[in-house]
Length: 105
Image 1 (cartoon, rainbow, N blue to C red):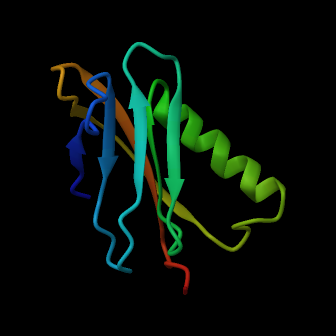
Image 2: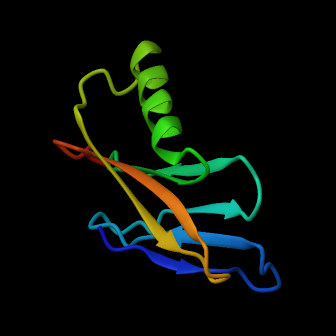
């Protein structure tokens, strides 16, 4: 997956990581430098990505919680983790799950 990485205007301590999805959406998630947070966005086709501290761990927990509540019970995900370089030069964790069969929207 190819991510687009930038800082929003007038927010130099925030990195926004997005991608252009095949379904037409442009999911984006933000991380604020120095925090212990990871934020996410879940696309209509089922792809989900987290950006920030412990992104992979938070992605796994998020998908487990959705399955336990009956959401996405029929989906199987391929999980991936990587880092991107934030505009301030540090590496930021990104984790994403690709459903084996994308959801219809």
